[in-house]
Image 1: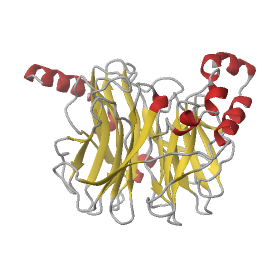
Image 2 (image 1 turned 90 degrees about the vertical axis):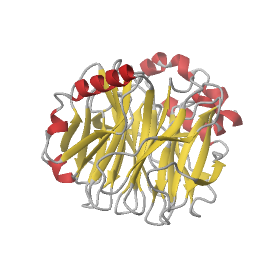
Image 3 (image 1 turned 120 degrees about the horizontal axis):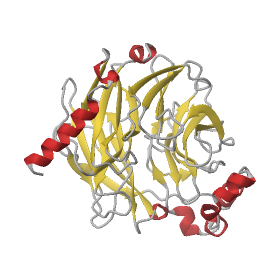
Length: 400
């Protein structure tokens, strides 16, 4: 990269940040992880290592599923540091796009990373992969992965056909007409084992339930539905839960209620333009029908977490259209209502702040990472970086 290109990247980034009220508000610190550049940087996930260091991962390249130079990159933020380490490549399948990395911080301190390799430039061909790093990993250098596997997703016989039929049946005649081209191959594909078993991708982090069960939320664009990969032996083996019934409800993020019920919130990739929701009484094996929440969603990623205080936090684009506004909302009744909201990025048409990841560190600080784009505002920005924001619950409760 030339000095001129670097300067233009920073000029664009600083210009975009100028006038951002949230960036200047006491109680929140925002910093780009690396210099803005004319590449696609997208779909981050952030997690805390046992010693308090933060690890962020994302994918980087000249495009998404159709660009064979797409790789998984990462960076460390050492505990107490005020700048991220230089980024480094942490996964690459030469000649194939690697996308959507998701992390799971295991109780033994190991960091697990899941991501799809796209086999034929279509999301339907995603092959789910999985790396594990021992707990001694830390800044500033690249991660040494101690094991690497393919995570095979094998839905129960008939479960995909049922989910597809149930999801389609819930559409109105007008919606069926609108999505006719997308729906047309569903019956044949849902009976095809290859389409059932490929195409599953993560987006939000994996979680460990109080019972010890591990869940990796997954979705597929093949049928625009979701399911959970489930492990009851600390990640040694995985099974597939039942798919959700709700066309367009994808990229689930899961939070457990105190009574053991799981709540999944979904990005809407269909006609609703709302954050969508389903619940599970059996730790992710089966789910209620997907319903709308009152929260707007423009077809963009979200993440929900339970805070140490008992409140829940949701990071989301709070618009029915566009990704130029990014907010954190709070719920004090386990996701039933969301009366508190504060913006990390507010109302900058032409820009894009999206695909956020959010977690709460052991010291109580909340950390979010998200794609920060200057340009087209549709995920193919001329300049982009990963933004890191650190704040606390009190800052959110103050409102804008």
